[in-house]
Image 1 (cartoon, rainbow, N blue to C red):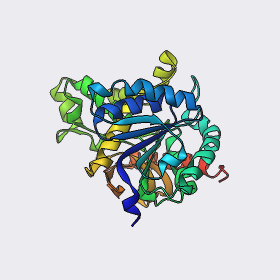
Image 2: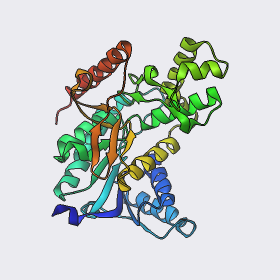
Image 3: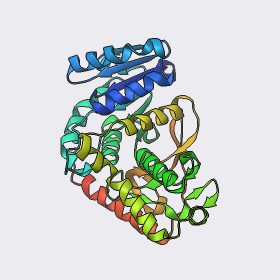
Length: 318
């Protein structure tokens, strides 16, 4: 019966900083929703962003965008949580843990109180830790709590490989798995361009220094957020498009395979930790995890990534 209380065309954004506002701007243009509610601790900020973004509606499709409060979450199809302290220059995503867990302790119980029956999408960093915190604090089934995970890292990887090979990045098939952060793992062993193994494609395009090139690209992807933060103090457009992509998969029940952060049970002997692995994403959230072929080195690195996250989870008092 609870399904009937959902307005599938309604989204709520909690947190109206750079990421939240850019994501709502992307969603406004997507046509996925007819109603988007903005919630922020600073109500005036939410109102200002709602007004500004609403003025683009005549160039998109009819919808309502307005500032609201937690009572507005009850019937939403999807709630996106971007609220939290942002990453500062020189700070890692994991440095943000305690600040943002504290913020989540005030947000997630408010959602839980209202018998929310939709999908909860976590975008705030460190996203893997906060996805796990959200599962615990919300009491929602694990499949309905998703983190944006390495969807953005994977997009950065595909973009850079597309540039390197002079091919359309949409034809590049490669995942980043593990933590959205410094211990992330590039699945080079299964990377391909429209079915052609990556090393073969590189040689076809005149690149023969595989080890140097892959190491350089992996470092560039891993450090790109730090570089953007150093140059412009925040990253928000790439993640906004990632949020839009995840929302598309959910709202259209696409059953797309995306490397989102979710609770892992048993893949590569990892259990009870949220991190990114490819999964089928649709109207019910995570439908099923998808095994990704990893070589021995990648498997070991993924376990290290899980261990790094587990050490932090163990220090959090929920």
